Amino acid sequence: MELVMNPETRTLKQITMDDINLVNKTFMDLMGESVGPRKSFIELNAERANIDV
Image (cartoon, one colour):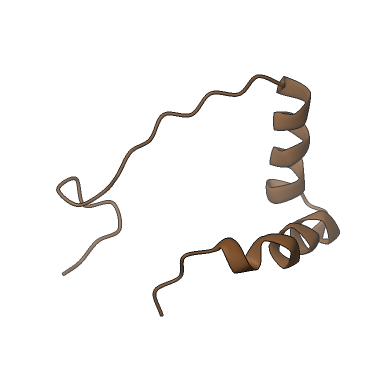
């Protein structure tokens, strides 16, 4: 069975954020209850996704 979080194959990356207000806005856009900002983000960034279908 192949698992996404398999410790032997996963990649962990540490990130840092300089602008806490931008981080909060982005988090709410992607994880908040409002669908509009999330949909806009997906539409604007869909070509950048690396999807293995």
